[in-house]
Image 1 (spheres, rainbow, N blue to C red):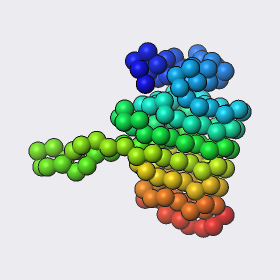
Image 2 (image 1 turned 30 degrees about the horizontal axis):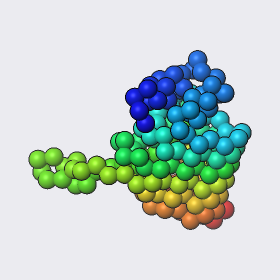
Image 3 (image 1 turned 60 degrees about the vertical axis):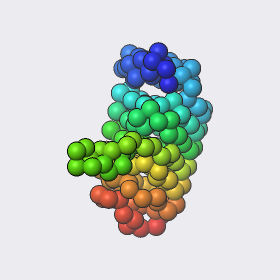
Image 4 (image 1 turned 30 degrees about the vertical axis):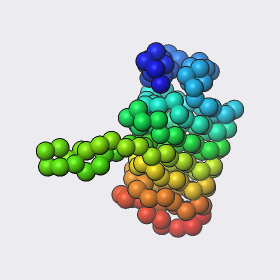
Length: 163
């Protein structure tokens, strides 16, 4: 994403002064794919515009997508609801030497399956696929792929029941 789009996407669009329609126009102009009926609330941050958001998706306030400019893809399928203050972190670091443990940066794509509900304050780590129809409980940290139609909670998130 070039500097002008970064300013538009991460300064103007997330502002409380931009309404939902203007927000979507700015994001689409910047290269985002956003389906009909989707809503993205204020206070978000996107490191990348390699983002596909399906139909009828709700992304609540203070959503963050980090990929350190590595162009990781974020796919959010139809009918997903994401609670406030969620962080999708598509990037991390290899473990370096004792001089600097945060070594080389890498990024991996993330997919959130259709119909999923992500609770508030959830963290999703690089390379994760959330199965369709899942519920990820408040405050969970998803470190592994999830099975579809399941409830996951905790740090790290673990399956507690089928839905």
